[in-house]
Length: 227
Picture (cartoon, rainbow, N blue to C red):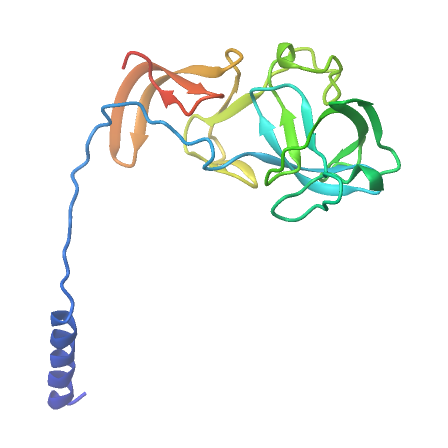
């Protein structure tokens, strides 16, 4: 490249840079003075379930504050859409209405061909998902029949936490290195998990805590009590 070309290129760079006012803001790290409140509508955990015969597929949100299966039913004259899915019970040959707010039909989990003859609560409230699956305590059940996991004695949702060098992947589950440890935490009560944390590591920053951490299941709360 000749000297005139280099000079022209430098002039172009200077002219381009001069036409924009660049400002760099550097924020120093600060410690949270208050607990972090997570918006529960940011994301949800969901299962792909098929209901009825023939199968009608849809997403069911996991609900840790209930212990029933709830299915959104199609209102008369309305059909299921991607934004407002609902179960068209009139097209299922195995559907049975049990009461004003309960019914039964077959359920099949995605990737598992075992059929569950489920009793579930019905709802007419339209949402962006087909229903809810309650993984809460048995005492939270509104319907007397536990139709999802009838053979489980100690029923309760749990968290899986990587103790070292692990990351969470929404679709594939927890991903850890070969020798990493994983701790499965059963729910502490009907509304929260509680576990001990000795240290928090973020890159090169290490902060000793020696505290109890609480994650609420029915409120947007994640924090350390009295910290």
